[in-house]
Structure formats: C-alpha cells, structure tokens
Image 1 (cartoon, rainbow, N blue to C red):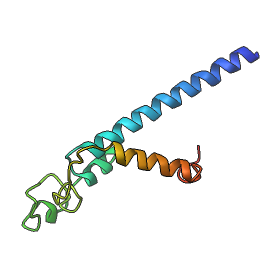
Image 2 (cartoon, rainbow, N blue to C red; image 1 turned 90 degrees about the vertical axis):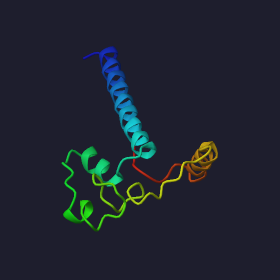
Image 3 (cartoon, one colour; image 1 turned 90 degrees about the horizontal axis):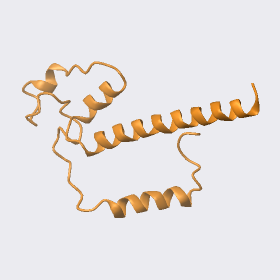
Image 4 (cartoon, one colour; image 1 turned 135 degrees about the horizontal axis):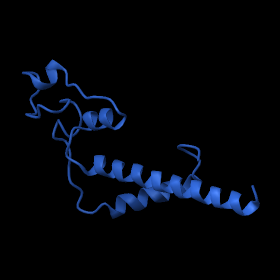
Length: 107
C-alpha cells in the first residue's frame, strides 16, 4: 500500500473514532440531562436488561417511581435544575487544563 492509501485509511479511522466519540458524548448528555432513573440508564447503556428488584417497585419505594431503582438522585427526587451551567462547565475545563490533562482515560 502506498503512503497516500495509508493516509486515507488513517483519516477514515480518525473520522470513525470522532463519530463514535460524538455518539458517546450525546448519550452521556442525554443521561445527565434526563429525568430517568440513572441506574436503569447505565444498565441498559451497557447492553443489559434492567430488572427492578421487588423492593424497588413495592412498598419500600417511597419515590413513586415504579420504573426506577428507588436509590439514585432522580428516583429520590434530589435533582435540581441549574440556572446556567456555563460557570460549572468553565470550572471543569479549567481543572482539565490545570492538571495538564493527566487524568482519565488514556487516548
């Protein structure tokens, strides 16, 4: 294979990786911004079937959410809507820069 073909293959692989990253980011944004049970979302995200325990949908569940785990922030109704998440996002990005991007998954 010539250099031009190898470059095209590398570019195609990079494009596929970026597209997959976008899909994952959108899924995470959906979970973070959604009002569904976080436990259920995570279980289903990783390809498993969510089956609530009997205690989650029975008398022990005081949240009224019979489709949820009864223990996450959404099911316990502990979620607060932020007025403006720009400040939080800036602080997070600032922390990433200050740590030299040394933490998290290795690319």
